[in-house]
Image 1 (cartoon, rainbow, N blue to C red):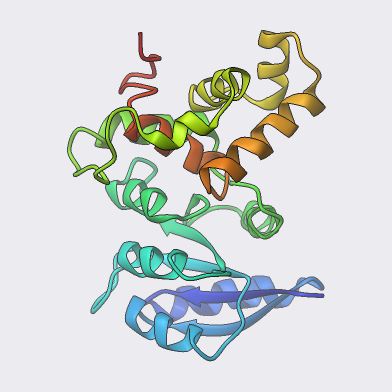
Image 2 (cartoon, rainbow, N blue to C red; image 1 turned 90 degrees about the vertical axis):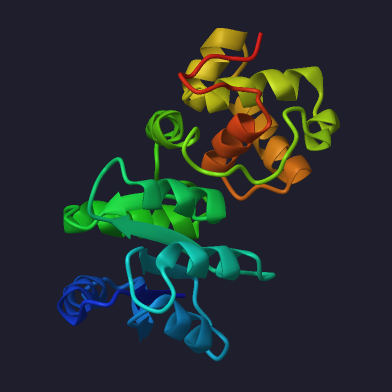
Length: 225
């Protein structure tokens, strides 16, 4: 079954370019388009979509608020933020709003296609280290989500799961975590899956964001002492 993609961008030429790239793929189908976030929400009410490619700077309703509203819905499509700049406060806000990652608009087509497939399969497409870089830069400048420094959600984790979460938040891959904790990579993957389930998170990017918001990791990448 094809991955159903929605393009949301106020620039028609960009949408046309993305649509041409995706249309050439046997496993992808562009099922909807919108010129801003408000139109995207209207279209999504009547269209089944798996992955939304979301611009951030648009009239009427920007991509960040649109992402927040989309991700708040049950069985929401995955959202992949498209941005012009690598360290963009909009990308940061999009991740906090529930996006599964972000990519630059001038990304090579092969990377964009790989990102769509990864997001569709449930993975994040922003390396945790890149997410940390965004958080380090912008978290002091933007309002928090209201979570307390030590949120009760973390009490659901075992000591080992908390340890794994901390290492995920510090940007380590499953393989690196396995080496650090002397575990198999499969065991680490199982722990990460349980962390996502217990905390109601969508992917590793959201683990990193939560770790910052709860104070488990501080700006600069250090763990809480």
